[in-house]
Length: 343
Ligand SMILES: [Zn+2]
Ligand SMILES: [Zn+2]
Image 1 (cartoon, rainbow, N blue to C red):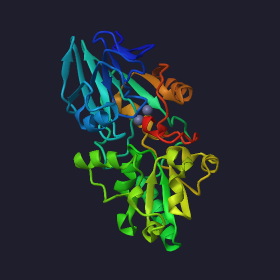
Image 2: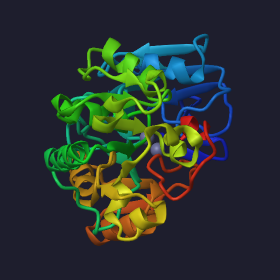
Image 3: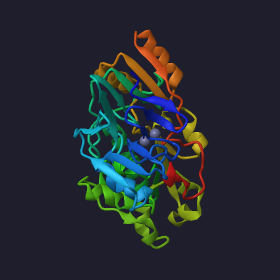
Image 4: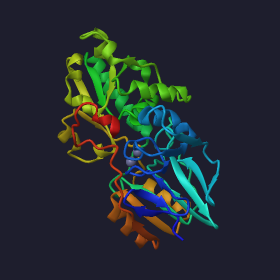
C-alpha cells in the first residue's frame, strides 16, 4: 500500500487525506520546513514540527491556521500515525514519518547530515520507503567539515579588515545566514546584517540558538569607519541593488554548495566562493538512505536520474516523483530586491 503518492497539487497521503509540502493550495498540509518552495501560502490547515512555528508564522502570516507537534510525538489521523523527526536542514526542519498497518514511510523534505548547532541534528528514521531530496546528488559534491569553511571565512574577513575593506558575504537569509553567524569568530569585528536577515535572527535567538550580536546595516551611517572592519551578511538579491553602495570599497563572497562548481563564483561576479551547504552532499545522501534501512527510495528533487540509477545499482527499488521543489541555494539568478524572501 502506498502511503504517499504524487498528485498535481503535491505529495499526497490517500489514507490520511493530507499533502506534504504541497505546491498548490490544499485543505490539509503537513510542512517539513519554512523555505518558500516547501511552505506555501493558501492552505486551509498547516501541521508542522513545533520548533518551526516562529519562522512559519513570520513567513505565512501570524494568523495562519497552524498546528504543531514536538519532534517524536505521534499524532493519529484517520488511522495513520504521523510524527516529525529532525532533518538538520534549518530551524524546525523535519522528516515526516507515516505508519499504517506496520508499513512505515518517511518523507525527508530537505536535510543535512552534519550537525551545525543552529537546529536539531538529522536523525535517521527506520522505514520501508524513504522519500529523499537529491539537490547535491552527484559524486563531485563532498563537503569539507564546516569548521574548515568557517576558518576560511574568518581568514578572509581578517585580511579584508586589515586592508580597511568590508567583507560582504552573500547567503540566504533563512538558515544559511544564522549558521554562518553561529560558526564565525565574532571577535574579529562588528557583524552587520541586511534587513531580511535580522528578523530571522530574532526567531533563532528566541528559540535558544546562540548567535553573536548583530547590527542592522541600514542603521549605520554611510562611510562610518567601522564598516571597513565589518562582516556584512546579505541575501543574494541585495548584491544587485543600490544597498551595497553604502559600504564603499568592499570584498564580496558567496556561501553556497554550488560554489563547489568551478565557474559559479565567476558567473556570480564575486571575489570569493565558500562551499557551505544546508543540504546533504553525495556521501551524506547515501549514508542517510542506508541508515533508514529502506528497500524503496523515491527521489523528489535535484539530480534525480543519477541518484536513482546509483541506488538501483546498489540493489534498491528506486524511483522518482516529479515535484515543484526548487533550489534554496540557487546562485545563478540575480533576483529583484525582495524576491529572495520566497526562496
Ligand atoms: Zn530547504
Ligand atoms: Zn527545498
